[in-house]
Length: 413
Image (cartoon, rainbow, N blue to C red; front, side, top):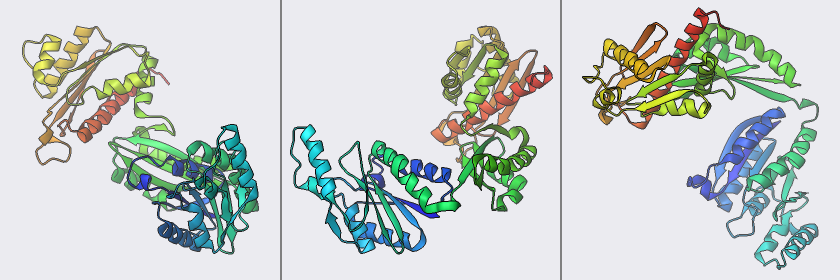
């Protein structure tokens, strides 16, 4: 069964609120194995919404609509559905009774505009709304079905779970199943490099493999359709094994794991104190680690310039932006804080030297651990938001890889 989602409301188009309803509905559809090919947002315009619904019925079996069921003039979903399906609006006595009972409990009387909520397209299946005034409904014609739910997330979620999902499962019949997805989070590889290594796996029909790029990282999504979650997982497993073989330590986590959390777990396993001094990453790396695990032993320092680095660490001269300068600063940080691990990020911070700038900046990272100091150079500097985020991801991965190497050397699993 092909399903599409239409969320309504001019406030969504203006960016005044975030459309969380579409995300929730997409996940629900995935869990029952429905095909979702389109998601659309339409403003509070009756003609445009009706046109969108007609288009949806020409290409999908079911359209899920949220919003526009309230009592005000701009709540036009009922009228648009009537226009799109050719089913005229009719007042439903049971909705009138429901509204009057609600207002009686509030010791109020419904106004004329409240009565707009008592009209549904002829023959529509009413979906009761136990926690709101606006009922949902299902309007069916020869082209398909339009399922309308309130835009209020709590009302929509309850209606979806208790009434819409059972309806969809019944409509799907024996074709019902699940779509299970697995996200492999990667860092330090680059989207094109990943595509070069696993591109041949991205042409399959079931499971499917796809990429999603983020700042400094990328996700590999494996999705499989099957009758049960266990069968879908069995389809995913060999594909995941092959991807892991090809991407190696570039994969840092799965599903809900994030880079800071994975790195924090490695630190906790070592049980050692980490000191971290950041310049052009503006303290974001330490903050991410502390948010991931507030009980980690971390000394976090932020110095916006090399002069401030020297002052904080009581160095006679500011550190040089070189491998030896970064290494010496890491050793000095280790001594100054008595930490087992000391990580420094020394970089140029001019806004004109950002990631996409023509003026090249630079950043040196150094980690003092045990009897060694490891350094890395990145031909990226600057302190704009994108560059800072990219360098923070790079730095956390640098720390993660060093911790993994130490763990392997010590025979840890």
